[in-house]
Image 1 (spheres, helix red, strand yellow):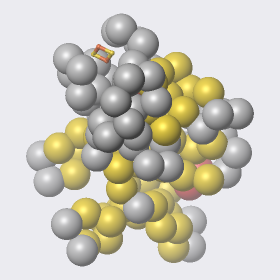
Image 2: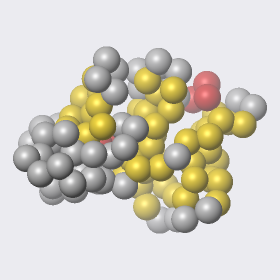
Image 3: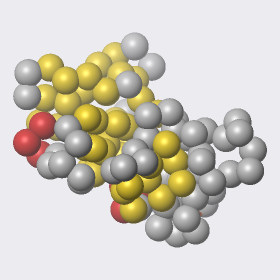
Length: 105
Ligand code: FES
């Protein structure tokens, strides 16, 4: 596992998300009530940008703006899919000082 810096905490305000490029891949990073989460940005349905989706801070979920598939930010689980085993990529987020890092393989 490698820790990759994605931004400073100050660059990702509460209730916002940011799309970053890591090793050629787009990753959406979210700040929910001061806790950070990271998912693959491309929705597994048809590639909609989750960074541009609707963030539900109470449920800790994001809903894709294209066809409304929803994802749990902590696990990447697709919460709107009838199957229980559908996940998008999710990443562990670490804070070091005032910087946000994600763990990538
Ligand atoms: S592309 Fe995300 S729900 Fe269809």
